[in-house]
Length: 173
Image 1 (cartoon, rainbow, N blue to C red):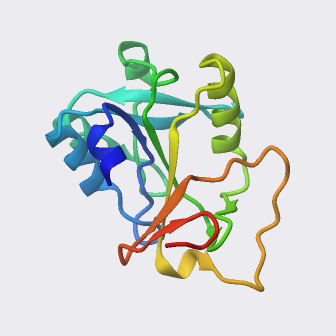
Image 2: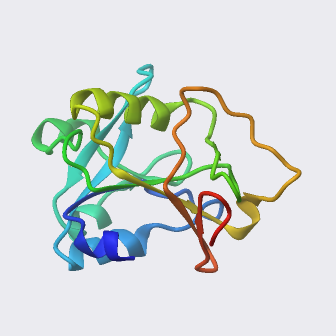
């Protein structure tokens, strides 16, 4: 993907084992390509998600897994990390499901990404990073199945599936 090749600053979610597209190789590829990598951090009791920078591949490999098995940042290291809330080129987003033709996204139900993107738009004068959904093939819904959406939902610009299929809005993959 040309946009990924040109990107300098990307946000990548760190995946749950066995239930999401695994993102470890993407993180390592980004470091090998000299990209700045930011990962989500959610503080317990706070409804907002923030993005913090990883320093290098060893930093990523040293992350401890949380109760869901997701590699996670240590709260004590946050003050030393760069915030990734400006000038992101790409944000990779997870979901429970994506609508195959419209790319409507059913997240995990807490609205973290939708609030992050809304805040990002405010902080960056309306400039939005390119949004890429990552999904297992089984997470793509075809009509007549419908994902319920609201006005505050942010759809990705494209979705990449585990089999390598690239879906764009309007169903042209």
